[in-house]
Length: 113
Length: 108
Image (cartoon, rainbow over all chains, first blue to last red; front, side, top):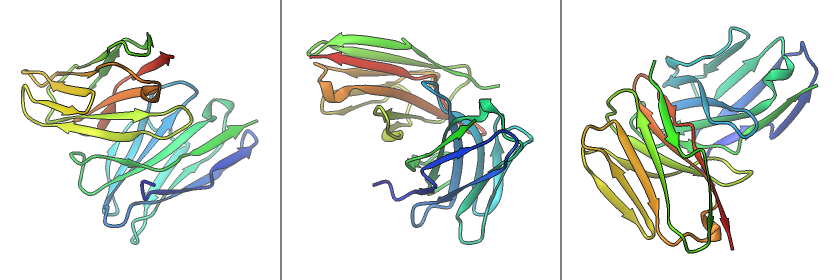
């Protein structure tokens, strides 16, 4: 158990809809990362927060947004969903900013139909 | 932008054979991290290398960081079926970028 909690585990929704993925980092970790992993593909970096502030951005679509709250949990919002957004979305946390190892949650599997 | 490539993309070995995956970055890295993702699982941190030329061992796994800090390798001696999974390297720049991964399949 990595200590990182992601909810929900599975999400099935229709095109055009909006969903929210939630992540609670490991106790004591200040940094939260979001990654997207399509079927049998690599880990695409979406966005990173450190202690409530956006720290780095990857190739995150404009339809996607995220935030980290004062209690350090994070949410990833995906809107106007398309079939191609179907993927496994991982949240990871670390103690520091970038140089510390990441601890991954079990992921949320999103299926857009 | 920063790119981190890994080769090979896939590797099938017989149990007991050795396995090596190579990681190459387009930019110099402050450190390199290695992760393993079992089928159906999430990436799990294995090790971090910081110094130029550093070599670290974990049982049958040997990790190496290149002298120029732009490449790294993971070598597994005498693979076992428990080694099955995808191995990722990751290097931080302004963001933590993961390599393309090497999927290892071990046949008993």
